[in-house]
Length: 334
Image (cartoon, rainbow, N blue to C red; front, side, top):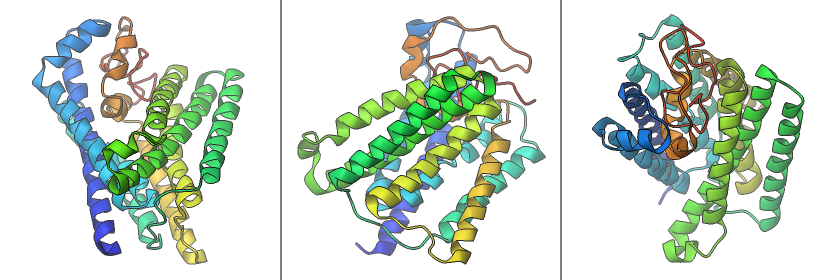
């Protein structure tokens, strides 16, 4: 298969993954809002009987499959920024049931989409290699582990927004490493098949990374407000993925000063857009509804009181803590 065809498959699959993640999150969040309050398994059982919720679960599963397909054919530096645009698909759908999108929200969409497009347009055509030497993997795990340890250690000494941002930094780094392992796993599947793949380390490490990322993201949401955790996590995750792509798989960023400047400007615009989108009232629940897929509901307790603004932090069942999304203040922005 030519590089052009592989890149086209990766781009289309990554866009499909972002759209599926976004729409799935909006459907799950809507059904959670319509379901009577309950705790733990009872809430999950009620939702499991609702077609809207099941449709969201099916779309989330499709999204994971599309992301894996994209990583099987394209570099991490290409796929990670595209999948990170899932909010662009979630918010317009959610706006049908919540408040309409305002000028600030549309500006965030334009900045995020334009920034990602500029970053990718300036990237050189490089698919990189399919796997990395053991020494490179050890270095990647060591660096991510060190980032997590330092961020969490500093977070223990802080409170509020600072603690939330530091915990979100650790979560974003783990999510980036998760994407790198997913890429390695999909390439291994293409080359060796399912049976042989299960004898390798990637599937089992991927499970551990997914659990770790879930716990870290939950800690970030509990620690502080939306503006402190969501932009940090959504920024660190693709940045971590892109950097790990260069370290592990030999992927390349722009070599010329002009191209690198365009990529930096695109990244800055995307971060600004994500920050604006993070202020939409329903964002934290939407951002994680599909990605956590209801697994952590078993650890939930009773719902907290409803805050001003109409959106209950505990209304989504997708987080292991009462603020079930990427913030403890769902209604932070009217």
